[in-house]
Image (cartoon, rainbow, N blue to C red; front, side, top):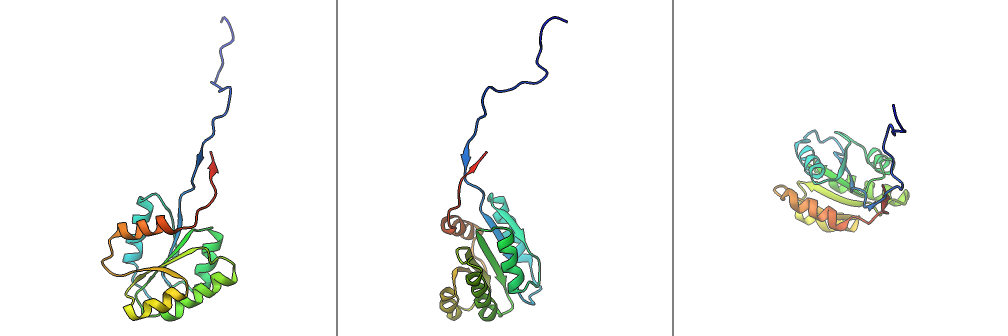
Length: 155
């Protein structure tokens, strides 16, 4: 029936644009703490803020957390600790991150952390501690402002 009609449209050129990849956050519940409601709330808030979130679930060892962070190429690890084991778990995670040359990953902590424990935790690489009642927006903004920049994606 008369003439060449293209079956699909093609563009004479390919359009690309540069964009920053989304921030990737690993949310983890280390140790024997079985209460994960807060971790799930923060995971959802981070996702709703445009971040990619990997939630490891309950009862993770420091080794499991660091291995997952490296495998998932995350920008930030968010630990939720209510058990009181933060003075043992956090230094071990920081040590493993250093050993794996991954200590550029932002490390933040949430939970019931006594004020007197904060200086030692920060010396071990914790960038921020968010206690009960911290507005979600405070945590989201801190992560956005403090992750190390990554390369641009071409899409």
